[in-house]
Image (cartoon, rainbow, N blue to C red):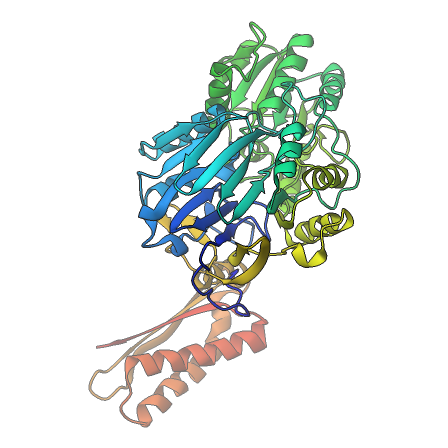
Length: 561
């Protein structure tokens, strides 16, 4: 899948005094968030995240933004601002810093702690700058001010970017929970003050723009979790994102209240919660947290496992538990809670895990049958408030699929933003802010860059298509040896198939036709092995399509003897 926008041309150079905004990820998808700001010859990046692969991308570990626009310009990058510590906003930073390790990484305390732990695994030592809400900073021609916002992870920030071309307010991911667990609300007073000053372009989180009303407060979850814990007889397993500190806090509190011990399962969960506890964002009741190695020291009705894998990721703890491929097992009497929402595209993976757990006899509690999760994103009612408070001159919805961006743009128009000043862009679309007006100026490449094992960007969409064909249609290998002097067939053709429903004997019927095709090529003169291979491929391909109703991958081999 590509976002190259063939209908838009490459942009002309930035107009004098203009500010160029280029989303390289996060617009048209949920994940891979990255926005480039270019002004006065310098570049500022806001967020640099990953997208997780779908079933149609077999073997892929992660999907990165396309950094090709920045090639040859790394020395011009003055910094990467990270709005918060979720993977879809920080996960690609190590891959970015491989290109240029001196780029400063700017973020709040928890965000920097998460990224530094990640960079350590990649053996990268970054240049970091700690910022807090209310703080102002400068990076080249960009003057920055950071604003507290409430999200499903502590220490999230919005950023106001001031330049001589105009001011841009980027919300990052946010909602307006008025009773947050950590008491840190979205700073609407700052939004109002910035609105009075003048916001030329407002980049707004679109994830929940289609959802009417207001996102429910996190506090609602605590009561529901407590009720589930009260009714559970056996072991409890809770699945969440490895960075959802608030949800882990609520699980710890519920476990403590019901006399249960909690063990963290999954490397990233253990690492992140260790950091959150150290920085004071996680309050662990005394004696509640134990090492997973000691979980069997307690009866099941006294234990809670806090695990990763709420999105059905194949290698995460919960998927492995469902597949009986983990030291932890679940069975009748146990309760599994999915304490997160479904990311679009992950539904099948999640339902597969739910079915696997229920097959083992566990009771599964999820968003569909209990209120065990609230979103971390502002719903339509909150977004309307924001537009009315900020009163921006131009709006560019960010972070979401096309339907989310369109819905968010419609909300802006309802509050009085002229429709022509709402920019609906996708990844790679170049937007210029000049003399108070934002307009689309062209497009740059912003395709998917796949991380596949140790390779980055080596695998192409064509190779993924080959993998899908191998997985869905099967594989046929045909071999023949020919005389190098006269081209006569010495041995073969032999056919071997894999992943086909039929026995290899079914191919006996086609062998004479393959031999005839080889002899025909030889009779034409000047035959080479490539022409012979193509002739074998054509005959077998047509036969497989007609007779077997399949389009397998066909690998013909002809050797000269």
